[in-house]
Figure 1 (cartoon, rainbow, N blue to C red):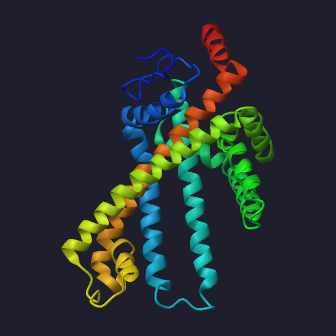
Figure 2: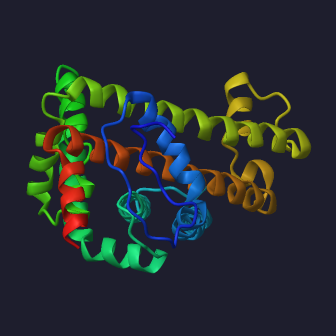
Figure 3: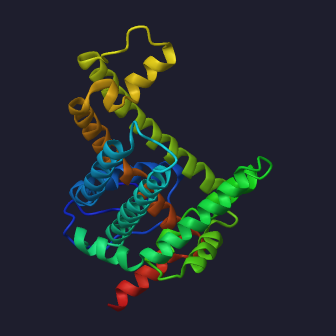
Length: 294
């Protein structure tokens, strides 16, 4: 084991002292997968909730809205998108909290992780809304894109100050800014690498399955379709293209792939959060002193 690595127990139920030390760029990325692999049962149980809710929501959306999108049901579509966002915030925050508890050597269960996240859900939602509105508002002006990226990175670790430090929504944004301050470019590089890895893994798995599924099932009306339409039918088919039965099967697998890749970003962000605290506040020494007093 490397000197700077955050060690975790092989048994998720086992509580032991962990070493919190500053990590290099590569150690954070490596720890992201190491933590996921060692505690896969815990993270899997958490994302099962995302899988079930997202799969059901997708079927409701397709069944009631697809093929009949009019001015009357556009509000319903926005409601579906909002519900999907609420689900994503809940699950990703629960994953972050569970990751933090594991890193700190505490025993955590799926129910306990969800209960704690739900108790902090309102400030998490407020932070998310502020980030989306501010960053999106700046980005659509074009000249504000650099400021949008700057704030997105600056506020990027807001969830753990709420979940771990009990900050309010605005307090969490300030806290995130304090941690990232003077290390913006380093945090930007790590976040960019994590996002690229996440997108690459999810795209490879989803697109590979989509291509294989298309080769085995095909699309009934693909003859004479243009190249762009054929690409859409291969990777983004609708129930009209492949039938409801095939669509159920295909979306089941793609939603499962999306669910099992979500922990990558949550775990990586958690490791980054602790790395910033160790570098700026000597959090490792604080934890050692606390453990010695117990």
